[in-house]
Image (cartoon, rainbow, N blue to C red; front, side, top):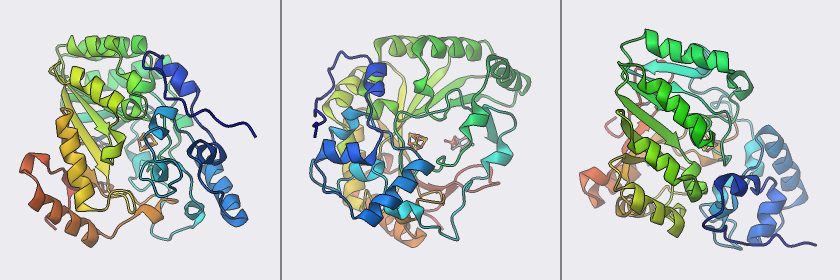
Length: 341
Ligand SMILES: *Cc1c(COP(=O)(O)O)cnc(C)c1O
Ligand code: SF4
């Protein structure tokens, strides 16, 4: 049986090559991390889960997981689980009713002053708890003409002052395509802020290219990069090194996390995360409770438990290191802060 080499990706390797070498089956993840095989029944359910939402994880991310430990907080985020096939009555396939706010393909405008553009359809990693696991990206695979329509929408609504590139993962675009997109956005006078929501640099730190840094540093737009990191173990050496360069650029660096049962549902783990983020120049922004998407119920925590963890966290940290505990609800004008309720 061939062994998948546990090779830490070369620091200089191109992020697209690293992405192309991602692992795409539960079996390969198990071999890479030397994990025990599941029972036949679990394996069958796991295969069903992988058909519903494909397995995808780049090697640099798996290199941060502890081999041999099936409960590792990184492994659990990417390895499909037989529990994903359990249908839960309170969970739906479009919990945020984004189908309604999808004013046209490639753009979601729900909140005042800011709209999401979805320039890329896929991600570099498929997180098993993702609320977009049933999202119809095929419909959002926008053509150049539709792309111009999205920009036209932004141009024609001067109540918009911020564009958020979201996804999928917008950093899946090549630097040249991003460059062009930013040029198009810069040309719209009422847009003052640009925000990029991405998990790609967390799973492939080489994505933080010098070219991208250069482009984002040279824009009239007030620019923010929002990472998605759930556990301090996700901040490896490579990412730390890149962030030490990026934090000198004047680009605001924030992080959002999802509160996940069995992964980070503990005040001490979240405290460590906030402190590690801050040491890397990143401020915690949001701590989202799970969106109730079908297939992710085993990651869910009751709101009371979430609030309890939040209160403990709040007592341990200075206010600027405490993320806002929020839930996203269909039809609301912004995220709902739930720690006060
Ligand atoms: C989360 C989100 C935003 C951004 O909200 P902020 O509170 O500004 O971070 C914008 N639009 C949609 C549809 C969102 O889900
Ligand atoms: S990177 Fe974000 S959008 Fe992509 S699968 Fe993970 S949670 Fe979902």
